[in-house]
Image (tube, rainbow, N blue to C red):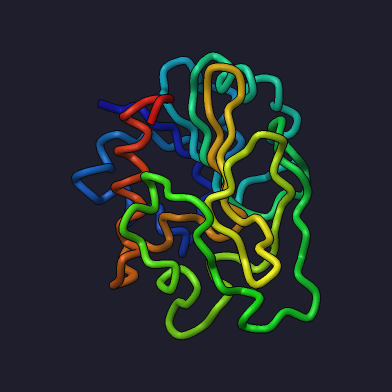
Length: 203
C-alpha cells in the first residue's frame, strides 16, 4: 500500500533509487518531481518526505498546504539546512564556526523509534569522516523533543514536534536514506522510519 510521498529532487547520489528498490519500503513510496508537487493530493498519503535537496523557496510558497496536511494528522520528515522555512516550527540553519571533530560528535538526547539500535558513533563517522550526518544546528520550536545533538555544546540536530493532529520529524543534515548500504547500524533508520510512519501519530 502506498502511503508515503517523496519529493524527488533527482540527485544522482541521493539514495532514493536504493530505497525504492527495497521490497520492505519501496512499495509504500510514490515519488513526485519537485515542480510537480502541486499536482498531487496530499490527503492520499500518511507521510511526506522532504529531501535536503528540495527547492525550499518553492516549498515556502506552499507552506499553507504542507501545514494543513500536518495539522490534519499527517507526518512530515524534513532534512537539510533550512534557508527558507516552509513549515511552522522550522528555523534557519546555524553553522558551527571553526568546528573540530569533537564539535561534530552526535549525541543521543532521547530515544526514538527511528533510531532504535543505531549507534551514535555510526552517525558521527562515515567512511572515517565526521560531518556527513550533521555539521550545524537549528533552533527547535517550543515543546519539541530533541533526539540528537552535536558536540559538547549539545546543539540541536534532530528533533520532533507536534503540529495540530500531526507531527514533524526534522533532521538537520543529509537525507537519512543516504545511509542505506552504510554497512553498520545506521542502515536501520529507513526500515524503522517506515515502521514509525505506519504506527501513526501516537508512536
